Length: 59
Image 1: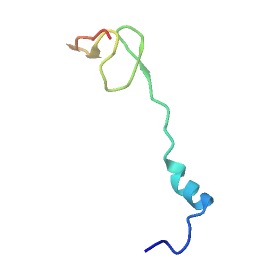
Image 2: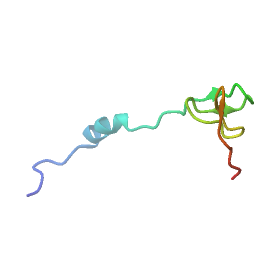
Image 3: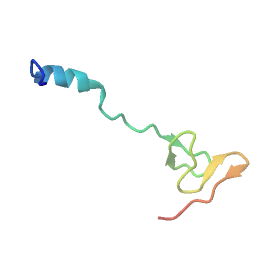
Image 4: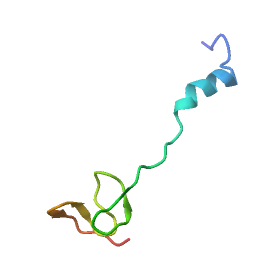
């Protein structure tokens, strides 16, 4: 079976209107001041929260 009617470009684009990527939310690291994502370890110093620090990897 084939579709009775072809999907028009407007209908297709309306359906895909929510597929756009959003900007990454960034927060300042309280330990070193660099940008990092909230609720994640800092990439430069490894800071997570007071009393917890993860080893930062150098890529």
